[in-house]
Image 1 (spheres, helix red, strand yellow):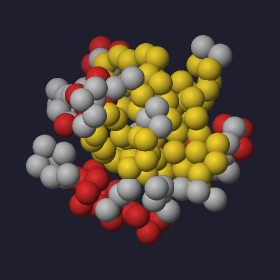
Image 2 (image 1 turned 180 degrees about the vertical axis):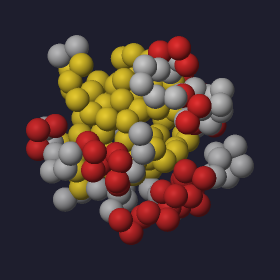
Image 3 (image 1 turned 30 degrees about the vertical axis):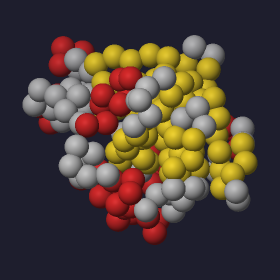
Image 4 (image 1 turned 90 degrees about the horizontal axis):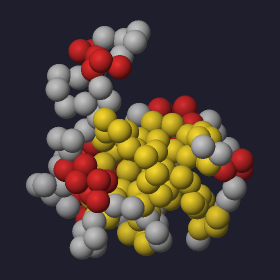
Length: 165
């Protein structure tokens, strides 16, 4: 059973949630099709007086088209015993396999998609996106991270945070 919580009631830092735990980013197209991918880059904070999360998707990923089309996207966090399934969702493509079915996840629908098996879900409405640009790197060599497929960053206003009891 899930209940809604306030962002200030989160028990961990964004560094733990995103950098260590990883998350599944999930988006739904207008036709109802869903795709998901594992993410470990992103963050949470306040922007334009709104509680937000931000995440990154490469245009070469199958999930990119879903994320572009969706009005809402979600970040779902799982317990450690789901690590292998999260790894699968980060290495296999939705072009070739139904990752959600293969992992045995139960889809729950809100404005965004989340999973019965997750422990925490952030449902966000996209409010801004932009592509990372080579010329905007200041103190980092972009070649360390990119050849040509620069991520698109999505900023989402957090409309709901659900935690499993």
